[in-house]
Amino acid sequence: MATPWKDPRTGVYYLRRKVPKDLQETLGELYKRSLKTKDLTEAKPLFAGAWVASEETFALARAQLKGGTLLNSKDVQQLASRWFTEELSRMESSGDFTPYLIIDEEEGASGLRGILQDSSTVTGIVRPFISQALSAHKLPPVPSSSPLYGQLSEAFTSHLLKLSDIALARHGGNWTVKADVLPKEPLTVEIRSDSKALSEIFNQFKKDKLASEGSTRTALKTVDEYQAVVTKFIELFGDLPVHLIDRQVVQDYRMALQQMPAKGEGIRGMTARKQIEVAQSLGLPTLQAATIKTRLRVLSAVLGFALNLGHLQENPVVASGVAKRLAKSVAKGAGSRRRKDYSREELKKIFTSQLYTEEGWSPPIKDLGEALYWIPLLAVYTGARREELTQLFARDIKKSPEGIHYVSILGTLDDDEDDGRTVKTEGSRRSVPLHPDLIALGFLEYVDGLPPGGQLFPALKPNKEGWYGKIYGKHWGIYLRTVAKLDSPASPSHGFRHAFKTLCRSCGIPEDVHDAFTGHSGGASREASGSTVSRDYGTMPLERLAQEIPKFPSIAREAGLL
Image (cartoon, rainbow, N blue to C red; front, side):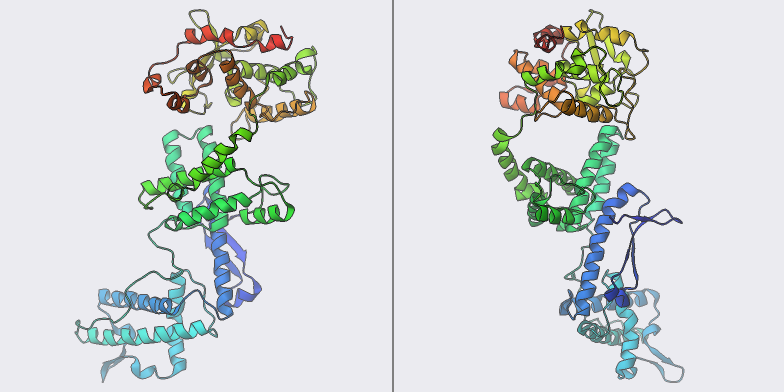
């Protein structure tokens, strides 16, 4: 797959591609456009848009070779009028009108009409003006043998004569003569000059988000996910000026997403158009409504940012109602969607597998130390996210003055330094009391055997993006499939978090309490229940959490571990 090319001298990225042979006489052998950035992350979506623009240029040039054009007769006159206006303005600013006059020392100045009777002379004079105008408006050169070139030549000749006549009048001191040309209006194929392209808006959106949230791993991950969505949009529709992304384009995008494959061998490196082509030819499963809704939400966020900056009159995703209709579709299918939590039977199968029942047994995979044993237990008894657990330090297992043993998940904002660790939201910073089962299983003894300044699971190393849970998650999934032989629709790691919430409800732990356990704000459920915003005030005391945690089912006893 083609990628941005970096100029070794300047470090700036470019789109470079060979021009098709049938167009080389018109466009030259190499098509090259600067992406105007030295940042590869920024260059990628710009490259996708530039590639689409190059295809449009080739298509226009090919159409012109065949006698067709995307320029109508009014566009031809508009190009000539713009050239005329710019040249007249330049001369009036300088006061020098001689470039379009014939100056004779004896007879004085005269216009060009006398020498423009010879058609070959006319062609030679206006050719550079035509080329200049086409280039300035990002239009490909027009073959001199095409009908369009004849129209352009005629229009520029007419405007050249008008320009010469006015130049002669101004040179003689007459400033009352007015130009009889078209006022400036958009060309049929013209992109509005005051509108920013989607890639430009996204780069501003990205910088604003990172400035607001900080360049944390979570924020960078979110930005990368958004960028992937924007890049695919650009591959489908080009790097459109945002004002051209209207309700119809959003609807077209929604329909295109329905044709994109959800998975398939080798599709990740393909462009969006190629993915659709392969999906249709091979009958691959396509994106689910929930995924399409997520991508529309991302586009809506970026276009909402453009709206706030004044580049749009409305957010077309919201105005089109496409996301709302899709949300209804997702809601209707909610009853049949896959289960996200582990059942009690599945939890029993996990915790009666070899890792937990055969002393000294070591899984035939990468050595993760004690992580593979303790993280699932911590996950099912705390409801914490995978990354929250894998990035813990030994010192994060604490004891309160009241004697409550608990896990400090980045504690509070005035707690120890984060050391580069992150939580999903600031509301995710919390303290979770240890369930008695964890203590009975020897978790505190495990912690006591570790250096207090080190990781809780020293064998886990961060990947290049800084995530501790990636390698663990990969090997835990392998263990479930190949050793535990678990066949569940639940996510290997996140299934514990969903199971925790289900079990809390089943044993009567109040919602505000289990929201505090998991770091949820409870906003949606609060609206449904009619609760007030008073829940946002104050904090949930650790003592209150410790009163409720013993109610949680003893999964370890059900599995025979205790």
